[in-house]
Length: 386
Image (cartoon, rainbow, N blue to C red; front, side, top):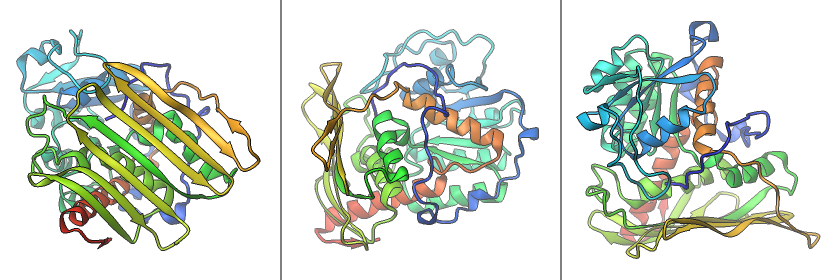
C-alpha cells in the first residue's frame, strides 16, 4: 500500500535499478526462460484478472507503459464490466471512476481470460487467497504472470507458483513496487554504487489506518493481515538490500489469528548489520498511510518520511543525506510513478526474455517467508531462525 502519483512515463535510462549483489540472490528456477523477443508481439497484451483497487491502479498505470496495452479484464461484477468503477476505494490514490473500456475484452470467468490467445501477460489482482490457483493455471496456459503482492498466503503455495513458472518456462513477476519508488530506488542505487560504502542497517516504518472497507483483511486465509499485506513491502526491500537474515526477533499485538502491529529485529550473520522495522494498523483514521526509513551507510545516513493526513499527501522529511563530512544533502529526484516503473520492468523483461531481479518470484517467496517467521516470533515471544 503506497502513495499514488500520476507522473510521467518511466525512463529506464534515467533510473538505474541493478541487482545489489548477484551472489546474494539465490539461483532462480525462473532464469530458464524460453521466450526470445521474436516470439513476443510488438505490443505486449495484458489481461487483468480482478478489478478492485489494485486492478484499477494497474489499469491506469498501463496507460503510461510503452509497448503494452490492456486487452482484457475479468471480474464477476457486471457494473465494473460495463466500466462503472466508482465503487472502488483504497487508502491512497485516485477514487474509482467511470472508465471507457472501449474494445477491451471482458470476462466474468478467469478461465475464459486464460484461454484467450490474444493475451501475453496475465496480471493477477485478486485477493491473495486466489493468487496461487490463478497464477499456476495461467502459467500452465502458456502465459507470463504478474501477480500482485503478497505472492501467496503460505510458503508452500508460493513455492508451487515459482516451480510452475520453471516448468512452463515463463516469467513470474510479483508486484513489489517499493524498489521503484524514487526514494527507495535512490537508496538501492547508492548501495549498488558503493558511493557511501556498504549499508550497515536501518529502521523502516509502514503504518496504515484500519482499512474498514476490507471485511476480510484480518483473515489469515483470505488477505493475510497487516504483516503479510503491508509489512511485506519492507521485508522485501530488506531482503533485497541485505540478503536473507538468519533469524528474526519480533514483538507484536495479536488480532485474532494475525498480528495487528509488529516490531522486528532482523538478525544477520554479519553482526555489523543492524536492521529493524515497525509496521501495522492504528485505529485512528486521520492518517491513512505513512512510510519512512532511516538507513545507515558507512559514510552517510539517509532519512525519509511521508504520510497521508486527511487525504492529503505530506512529506515530513524529504529524502535527506547526512554525510560523514558534515554535509546535509537533499537529492533532486526525478518524479517517477512507481507503478508505471514496476509494470514497465515486467514488459521489458518479457520482451527481452531476461529475468527481473526486482520482481522475481523467489525474492517474493523469501519476503513471505520472513513475514511468516516474524509472525511466529511475535506470537511465541521468542526469536525464530530462518
